[in-house]
Image: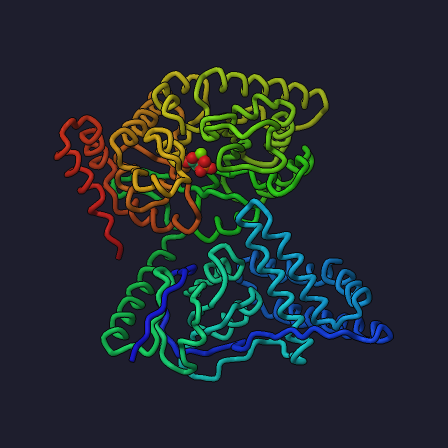
Length: 582
Ligand code: PEP
Ligand code: MG
């Protein structure tokens, strides 16, 4: 009889194959008290296990095919660096000597300590790096406990496609499994931000994590169906379920092949309108993803990550180096947003002294914080100006709500240009400075702001929050978060119109820009620059290629002018109806 389990779908796609359970037994770590005279030998045993773990990882790294994205090798390098770090070398042997305990126990205690440190971090991405510690330690433990000296995780021996079922899978194992042609994997632990999940997405392997009891409920060798988007696993399916998944898999495959062919196709609508498709990035390593999708550049580089999980501020040199690295890794223009701290983006180094405000989203955040702490702002602006000598960069100011903020920031930039000039430091004198339009007041006064900005970028994540008075991070009011609310659509249209009249470009970098449900609507409202997560670019491009922008714009004008709810609903329906996939 078939069984159905659910977990978190972290890498979309349909996979059909036979279950292959690996690492099916949790490692039981024994605690032993040793004679202190044995400490040297135990330390040597630990050091040798660490060396074998390094050999295993180096062997895996060497087998990564040349066309694999660069960040994949970086995962292995991270684990190799961890194996050499004091935290997993001397710190463990110190524990062996101090506690006269066995190596397995000492490394487990050290791992627990490191995991606790990661778990205490504010940032979800860094917090999820605890997985790396666990994966590296599990590799050492397997060697210590089981004498595992193999350079691979065990090749599935069925000739049919295989779906791996495991308690957890390390990033290194994901690479090996993908080389062995594994069709998908299901794990009991892990989250969507883990390296394992990121890798599965990069390698396009359907994957589901967090399927509790997967190893108990699923039998080795039985047929499994997995839907990596919905997070559903079906074990021992009946004929109808199997046919359904086979058809979905074929449709998915056709859709992906078709999308991949669009990489080098210019994003031009059926009636000849060129649309610019850009990427949003947060970490410098995200630049790798912009290449595979043929994006025109970066429309939003969020610089907050540089300030996160540290107690000091990044200095000018550190920021300059980070920005230059991104500029050199991306082809096309890069819009770098100045620090957008405050509200939901808190970091230790940016926290202002004093009590937490009652309404942080309406408080001292983004440009307000930067203009108050000019010393901090100057450091970032100098670094950005210097980086502009290395490639096409634009500076984008977040949360602008009035002309004065824009003028003050621009005046400061001019002062810093003079300062850099007198120091003999290079920068782009024509560097464009633009405003994010994410506060209703900014959208409503867009024609005035346009006289002081070189470009606008619509931050719909915040614009919707502020327009509809709903906290974007509060689950209780999430149902009110409606990008199609007439007030939101009017503000978007106002901003685009103001940009057109002033002759300055207007892009959109909020999530709405990468959501294919809204692509036609945004074209109808006159948007010509879309910035989004790299994984959305090809799907949005596909819709643009089929669009008749002139006709859409007529519908858009009707939509904005319409005072009739029925007509509005009908127009919105027409603008969304054409978006059916494949
Ligand atoms: C936005 O508000 O739409 C935006 C892109 O900025 P963030 O999500 O970083 O606030
Ligand atoms: Mg915002």
